[in-house]
Image (cartoon, rainbow, N blue to C red; front, side, top):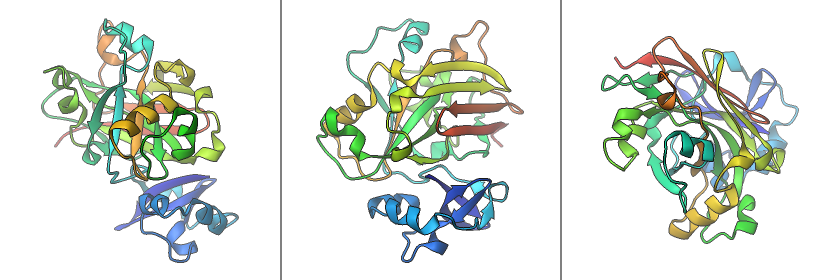
Length: 283
């Protein structure tokens, strides 16, 4: 099942994707939670599947405004330097433990929504990533049990303002400019991706391939990341872990390649879909 968060007019909703349309969950499910995050917390994925299966779409995908998969997660945990190719292109040492930073909800947009290059910099870079969404409250999860706490997977663009990222050893400023990243287009539930190590990730800028990786190349795989994160914090439904990007980012190209207004950036992950965003300048 694919579930997207979206707006139709002034109303925020979520629904099951059916072909080129979407079945509105609150319309079809009795006592439906107001948001996808709330539905995960209530354990309603099975009920959503039953209520929307075979239903006629309520809206065309072309008529909705996609929101980030989880518009207001409690936590967005990002993993840095988690592909050897990205570590090597930056001339860094391979980390011995996961390198972690955070993004704020305001630093993300949904599928087809403009990613914003800020006034402060023209060094706006792309990072294609696989993201996972937590499905239940968990702490101290063993690696062998880690996949059981995942609700599903999506695409993530960890849009980065490179000069601000490198002001100090702390990445957070360069990763949190307003609407500089993207998350979508939808959540693909975990039952459809039983083995997240067998996915192919592509990043395309204006149709040109910039990044390519398979998710079995992660230095710290998904079970390790969940075990590590749940050791230092409690994860709750709707929390997001962006698992890191591979080599080929614009900053290390010769000459560097940065996103600019008029560009289109795509993150394409097999089994999930394509997250596509135009680039605009901050007003």
